[in-house]
Length: 378
Ligand code: SF4
Image (tube, rainbow, N blue to C red; front, side, top):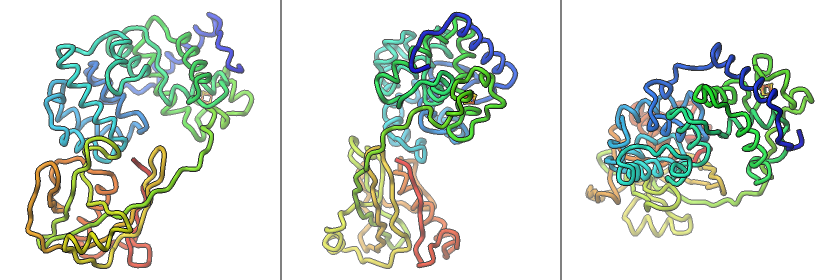
C-alpha cells in the first residue's frame, strides 16, 4: 500500500466484520482485566501490557488488584508498596506514573477517570493508544488504539513501510487505525485487535493460516512478512560499568540502599553501587572485608545503553542500623515489601537459594565457581 492510507468503505466493513467474527469464535474473553471492566482496571492492564506479554502480566495484575482494588487505594499507597508489586516487570517509570496518575485522578477528577481523549492523554504515562483503549473498552466510546501488537497487524496487513517510531510511519498507521475503528462493538474490536497481534500475528512465525485477515494481508501475499513493521535503525549502544557490593552481616543480612527518586531505577532499592576505580577505597572506608564472589559479572540492557555489572561480595561488622528511606539490612529469605531493581531481585533470590541449599545449583554455575545471571531488562 506504500503508506497510502485511503481505504474504501467496503474494505473497512470487511475488515471489521472478519475480526469481530473471529473475536466471537476464538477471541480471549477470560483474561482478568476483561472481567468487571472499569476504566481503572483497563488502565492498569494497558500499562502492564506495554512491553510485557499477557502470560507474564496476569499474576502481576491479579496481585495488584487484590492490593489496590481501585484508584483510591492506589493513590493512598506508599510508593514502595507500588514498586514492590512491580518488581520483576521492568520499566519502573510505568509504576511511578501509575501512582502519580492515581493521585491526580483523585485530586483533580474526584476519583473518576475522565472520558475524553485529551483529558486522558494529559495524565502521566497515558498516551493516545492507552487513552483509546480506556475510552473504547471501559466507556464504549469510539476511539482508535495503536499499541505494539496493533501496529504489527496493520503494518503487515496494509504493507505500511518504515519504522513506526518515525512520524511518517506512525501517521500512516494511525490513519489506517482511525479508518478501521467501528462505531459499533467498539470494546470488542479493540480487544480483538490487541488479541490478534498477541496471539496470531506475533513477531516471528505468525499463525497466518488461522488469521481472519490472511487473504487480504498484503505482506503475506507478497511474502514480505518479516519486513513489517520496519526495524528501528541500529545504533551502537554505549556501555557503562559499575560494581555492586553484596555486603553481608553476622545475621546473614544484606545491605540495600535506596536510589534517588528520579533517574535510573528511581526510588528502587539496590545493593550499594560503587565505581570500579573507587572499590578498594570504599571497602576500606566502610570497614567491609572483601571475600571471593560467587557471582559472575553480567549485563543489564536499558533503552539507551548497556550496563555491565560486577557483583562483589564482602562481610561487615557494622552494627545493624536501618535508615528509613535510605538504607536497610534485609535477609534474602525474609524480604520486606519494597521495590527492587531487577538485578537486586535476581541476586537476592540466588542468595536465598544459596542460603537454603548451602551449595549453588549446578545449572547456575558457570564452571569457574561463579553464578551466571542473564538479564535483559530495565
Ligand atoms: S496473515 Fe499473517 S502476517 Fe498477515 S495479519 Fe494475519 S497473522 Fe499477521
